[in-house]
Each structure stands twice: as structure tokens, then as C-alpha cells.
Image (cartoon, rainbow, N blue to C red; front, side, top):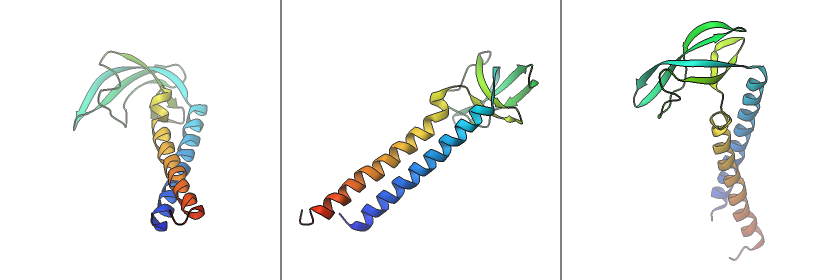
Length: 135
């Protein structure tokens, strides 16, 4: 295999690993300062096959407010009338995430796997070629 391909694969793996780590730190920081609240899905706004929920939050710490989440999904996060748990940044009420570890960390897991694949597989191929040059 071409050494340039190996180096590119390892570099992409390291970059994805770094981004995964920074994303993980950001999520942990958000979780540390966020307030856990219950929100009722009052509307689902469809856009290109993705549903953006509008939620109504009633909270003693944050007051009552209605907001549309900045992210959508298909299937939707919840059905109209359903109550869900959310994490809200008390300094920025528009910064809301679904209170679900899998939902929060999905990007970290995907980037981490790409990083592992890039570093481990391409690195292993590179080391193998280094020590077994004729193969």
C-alpha cells in the first residue's frame, strides 16, 4: 500500500479522535451545568422528512417557555402530547438537548470508531510494511 495513503489514513484517524475527544468534553461540560426539566411536545414541524419538535417547558428554575428544538429527527423525538426529559443550559434556554446518553454521545461514538479504524488499521498496515518490506 502506498505510504501516502497510510499516512493519510492515520492522520484522518487522529483528527477524528481529536474531534471526538473535544466533542466529549463539550458534552460533559454541558451536562455539568445543565438543568434537567420535563418538556411536553406540543407540535412537530416537518421539513424534508425530518421532524423538529416544539416543546413547552414548565420549570421552577427557568420559568415557563416554549421553544422549537434546533435539531430534528426521523422518527421524531416524541409524539405530540408526550412528555420527555430535556437538559437545558440555564444561561441559554435555547441550548436544549434530549436527556438521553445514547442521543448525546452518538457523534462521539461514530467519530471515535472512525478514529480507531484510521489509526489502528492504517497504522498496523504501515508498521507491517515497515518491518516486512517485501510482502
